[in-house]
Length: 435
Image (cartoon, rainbow, N blue to C red; front, side, top):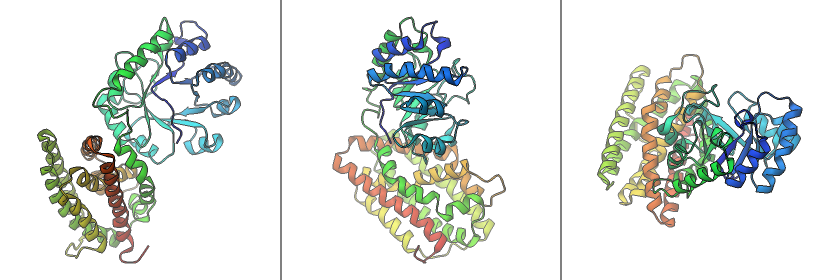
């Protein structure tokens, strides 16, 4: 993934540029602090688009600012631009990457949490959260995320995030404070009497917001780092036949029953450990939140389990498998250690990976009736997703206060637990056969 400075991302609009040449607007914007420029044109010929991009290219190159082309892969190739930004209805990402190669920047707009989940499985360079607020410059958009939705999206995203829609001097500070890596502005610069001064003002607000104590952007959050580290495990999980067949509704009942009987053992132990974990949290408000999440989560999972046990007639009077016993020993070891950061890291995959898998299956669900639909719905639910987001915030807070050595230990505890998640589904599918 190519790291780019996304903080102040100018998206051009000639109709809003007060009759000025777009090159002039862009030159002033980059002089004022714009860190990336996207050329967006919807109503000109291909020749005009290419000629305009060729005029902008030296302006951007002189300032060391990437030039991104909106939608048009052909134009980006023709002018050797630094990359493209595509939307959900544009050329599929995989095709765009094949045509552009690995050295070009590709950004992808996401319009809801299902889009964001799908984007997590792609090696895009950033995602555009669109729209955060309503905006008159782009009317063909989905329902706005809002500030709370943006916070949730930032936590969920496996990639750097750019907030799109309604970005101006009154909103960019709170958006950066919510964790976005950058803001995409249109009229706030293009329609300003002085694009340079407008960019300077926005850049100053963004810089100030980056200093806020609750902003995790000055150093990449631990949860983002650990997700990147565990992505190979997650990718093995979502292509595992247990998950692909469960998503299609074709998973053999005996395999699901074998898995669920072990999960019944595991979640009862996990529920006990969640309350032990809550007792370790010194912040009373956070402790209350965590207890409520644990109680609601365990009740929801318990009800779903009972419904499926009754529906399939599953026998849960079984002994723990080697995988189940090992996983429970791993989490209990870290809880008994008395280290809240380590215990939280070891417990996190059971909620986070399940939430990610639930959202992934929901986004790719088969329209036909699925006997395991209740399982998917539980882990893809808004309540489960919101609870997971809050736990991720707590983990990042703990990691921010930890030493580098402790953060490494947190990562190790998480990765071992993530491997157990894969092994749990693998055992459900194959049993004691080694696969």
